[in-house]
Length: 150
Image 1 (tube, rainbow, N blue to C red):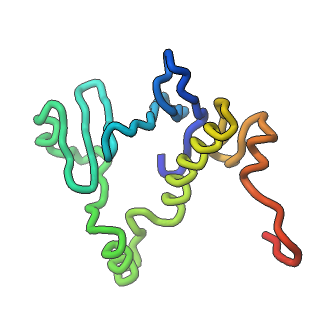
Image 2 (image 1 turned 180 degrees about the horizontal axis):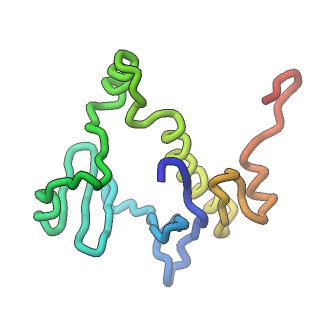
């Protein structure tokens, strides 16, 4: 989802929704869970846990499966600084270029805005604007002092 974003941000309600949740147009749900440091992917065949130090799977056999020629293959991460220097030399696109980083941090900002406003939000990722919510949209920019403008 590097070139897109969620379509809805849902606040926890204490009943059905246990934690801040981002809903994506393809049906993927992302939950903010502070019980561990990392990312957990829940799939139909198991789970994958990723953090800076390790990758583990349940069941363990998932990590041993070879990646097929048509599967999405991620670039090897040698660290952001090393990758940046390597890309200067090779002219390749970095693992996390500015566009990917923008989309990644936007998800966090959207969650914070939903929490600050105290309500769920609908998001148009292509337009990068809230749907039918002028109050939320005013947080996307701020007035600038003359003579500064964009």
